[in-house]
Image (cartoon, helix red, strand yellow):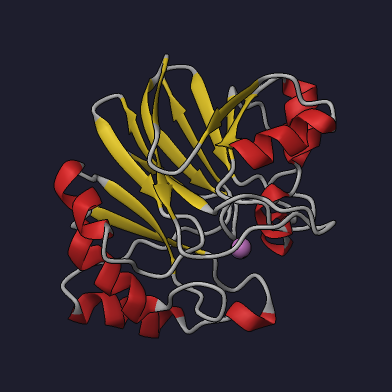
Length: 227
Ligand code: NI
Ligand code: MN
């Protein structure tokens, strides 16, 4: 299985011929320049954590071109359907669904969610994805919250994708607190260095994780991790 980072919160998982794309903010993402364009991507599934522009991104164009199934909360799926996206799987916080590739659990995320035009986007979410024999938790935009301890107990998490950019989400110290509850084997950071508000010192961020007993694996845009 291969996980690829496209910068910000855009990730792709490729497993046994199935491609999952998360938060496809590609065209307006400064990290994707020379790395990837929205037209290069051929996902089978599109997962949205919430409706903010830096996550919603190219969802409609990719979904329409590829026919990929859009997986998101009810409000996001409904909004996409109004824009002509036909293949959808609605979920909501706390629910799970059995996909052909494995079971996905939609988590809580402590954030907000509205579309660029102001339409309400429902509650923000994260995803715990069971695929092959692995468990990957994409936290979405969030701060730590106490129920993460339950997720840590209920899921044997191999990899956590964690926001660390501060300002709009938790910072490295908050992410370490989350990691204490989730106990993932590996952590890849996201949601940093895209805009001035979330520019961070990655060496300092790594040190914070190290002091907390975790090692952080930052990926460059376009870089992949084999799982
Ligand atoms: Ni957001
Ligand atoms: Mn965001």
